[in-house]
Length: 203
Picture 1 (cartoon, rainbow, N blue to C red):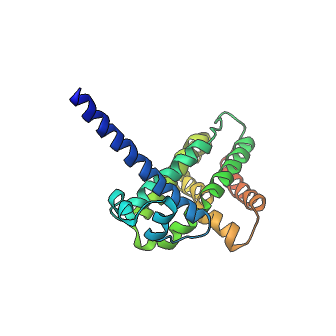
Picture 2: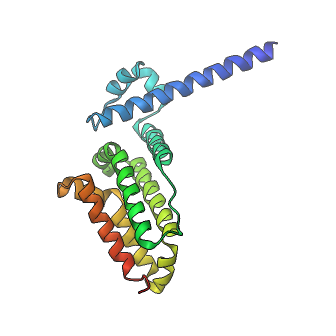
């Protein structure tokens, strides 16, 4: 029984620690979504209802918190993602792809804005961004495999162009550089992606 009691206490502590870490990440992302793009440890701890010491006991520094928060944003994207059939006609694939990209980019907009501010001095935020780019690249390669194969030696260049048109930097330019609405921005993305793929699509 003693062994069972000890195991129970350990499991309980582990569960509490996981809940605390989840609450910290939730507080961090909530503050960012409300416009506090550089929340301090003090503000995060207050929002999570814990002490500052507890925050830094669970996360040794902001970089480890950025890693956990980045993983949560990816999880939210995964939950919102809906597969698109590569067997659809090209026009329907482009439309469905750009509609989904617009939705997912709007989902990550607050955290992407916050990361943009701190990424020059944060290796972890840079790694987080590379993960998002890699996911887009994987989706493009799967969804437009036929067209990419038809591009021959220009495959890599076409792939890179499609990825650039689909990621946060381009979306940020449309939404906040040019001041376009979501539907207008999505239409520009669809026009760009469609034009790139039309170059190699059969007549």
